Structure formats: structure tokens, C-alpha cells
Length: 321
Image 1 (cartoon, rainbow, N blue to C red):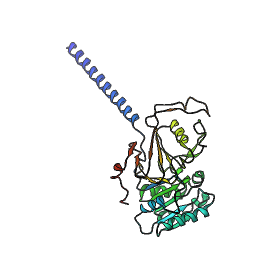
Image 2 (cartoon, rainbow, N blue to C red):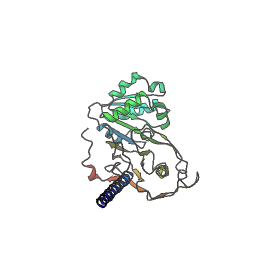
Image 3 (cartoon, one colour):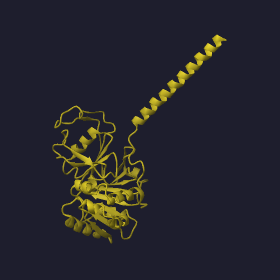
Image 4 (spheres, rainbow, N blue to C red):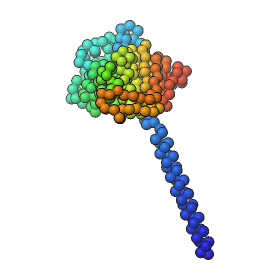
């Protein structure tokens, strides 16, 4: 009987140890699987659209980008609020966009020159944000957008509408650069291959794990995005050329518009970077950074990190708007 009990006890121990071992393996595998997954891009799918433009979009002749923007609205007379916070010349910028959007059809265009934190928290202006079909941020200085508007009543309403309603949030130049949670606000293109030469802060946070740069090709800003990805390769860098833009649908499907080019830098397969080992002002080295270029009719899936050819986009139309 003792021998039988001893055998039973030994078997029970083996079974317990096997279960522990199995559970430990499962836990390790689950951890590995979790670690291998990319961070979610806007996991709660926004109902609105983002339209980011690289600057110097055509406002006088074909108006390709601006007319595309208007076409995304299902209304005969879209209501457009142009926010001129970024610029030091709000009256000039306001007149330009009133004229440009008026050329694109019978649109209702108004200017919101919000230049103080007090104005950004004026509840009396909320009605205009609520009624707008398109909320458009002009170029200028993206730090003016964040320092004046971030966390304000108006910006929180803009975010709410983007997440919950069929609203279009658009921006050009500084207005595009401020959209992402991580925002570039400075750094000369001829120096930013050196560590510590890119100035980065918090944007208004309409999209995560993405960094947007503008005037990208014309001002030689490739190394600005390269440096950001060397520090954190989970980000996708989007370099917008002039008269080039992207529509971001569902928080992750990118579609190129305009006559220019967009460069996409993807660090998901980055094998090596020396950024943590070098001193400030020393040059950065990277291995296996993925670079794509897209033009009108092409796109990119931020969730799947997948290039989208024209045929891939055919089933992802935003024309239902």
C-alpha cells in the first residue's frame, strides 16, 4: 500500500510539474507573440477622415487637392472652417483660402483666427466647429497650434468629432505636421543626420505611431524622419512633398492625392541603429530601414504595414461619403 501511495504521489507530482511546464511555455509564447505585434494604430476606428497636405498646394489653377477635399463631403454647400492659428498673417491666409475654396464650388467658407488660449476656450465658438463639414488648419508654425489649441474646448471638440462623426480634419504644412501625437517642429535638413538635431514635441494627437513631416522633398528633410525612427522604430514616418497629400481613412488606410510625392519610412524591420551609442552631433547609422514612395492612386496600410497599389485601393473607396 505504501508503495502504491508513493507511486500515486510521484505521478501526481509529475503531472503537476508537466502542467506548470506547459503553462510556463504558453506564458512565454504569449509574451513572445505580444512582443512581436506592432502597437495598434488608432485601435478605436475614427469615423472621420484626416487629410494631411505637404504645403504649397495649388490654390489658383487646377486646385486638385482642395477640390478632392471638398468632394469628400456629401453636401451641395459644404461648410468649411479655416483655422489660421499657425500663421502670423491670418488675414492674408484667410483671404487666400476663401478665394481658393470658392473657386472649387459654392462652399460656405469662414475663418477662425484663434490666437489666444482664452479664445480657444470660448464656448461661443463651439457651434461653428460642430456645424463644420471640413475643419482646415493653415500652414505657419505648428508650435502655435499646439501651444494655443492643445487641450482647449475647441480642440477637444475637434477630436470628438473626428472620432465619433463623419467630419473631415485637414491641414497643410504646419497644420499637417501637428496632427500626429509626436510632432517635428524644427531641425535644418542639412544637419539632421546628426543625433540631437531634430526638435520634437507633442502634437495634437489625432493619430498615434506616425510622424508627419512636410515640404519633405523640396527642403531635404529625409534625415529628420530617419532620426525619429532610429530612436523609436515603431513609428511610421510620412514625408509629404509639396502639392501632395494623403487621406487617412479609419485611422490607418492612407491614400495619396495631388501631383507630388509622399515618402513613407517604416522601421518595423530595423536591425540596427547606433543612436544610443553615439554622442550628440555625431552621424546616425541604420540597417534595414524600409522606404516606400507613393503618388496619387497609391497608398499604405498603417496597421498591416503594407504597400497598397491602385488595385488594392479599389475596395477601399471613401466615395460612400
